[in-house]
Image (cartoon, rainbow, N blue to C red; front, side, top):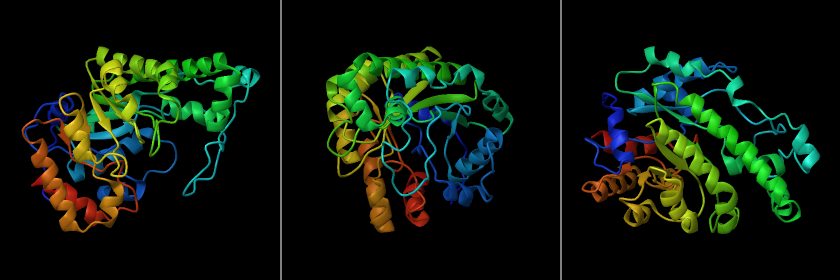
Length: 338
């Protein structure tokens, strides 16, 4: 694979719905074993975020990205520990069932966590590369984890005031998280990763998404824009009925996560180009099952489709998981590199 110089300005152009100077790669997550493959070393053990950032920089740079995605600190919302398997119930991490649980929950203080690793990466980032900071789960994701999805649905009827307090408690802390992250000039852009839906609709009704979720996402994006950075939403699921909220009300610059079973990236690009940047989009199932030739052809066609209008970056629909064959992934990457 041909090595190329990182140039974060290309990702900026994509997010501004402009034409980058050359095809630009985008990925939210490279799975652990994949990172090890590209970095040529084992993933650092323990909770040393600085070591993890250096490791991720090495892997992302080896592939040809203009950025490295990372957490900003070890800030997170404490939840019930669960065994990580192929799937899990949305009730498995539940720790809040009522007002008393809410009051005694150990709400974390974002300001109490160490973000200095973001600054220390200046000496490790290749010329032209920036950090792309994402969140420890999202607003809706964390609320659902704390109360359970079923618990949230009941609570919205039984105690809507508590539901609002939950979203306010989580949302306000994410605003502070990003305010801390954005103090470092190594950070080029931010992502708020918050899965809102599944194959046919959002997890909550459109009206409840607009009531509880949209306002805090808007606050987060306003915070990111206030610091002259660009903001990307990563969200899985069918978001058809809230896309206008994502684009016009919240003001996201880019949207990531697409599935062929919901809306193929080609259709998403044709529908939303000029309004929001389309990030990635090569369906993960397609990357697993298709031949290298099919992957190359689809990537070439997608780049041709977006050549005149811009606002598109090449990448997987969701993330580069451990079960996507590396040779298939590289078939996509190589097209962008050529």
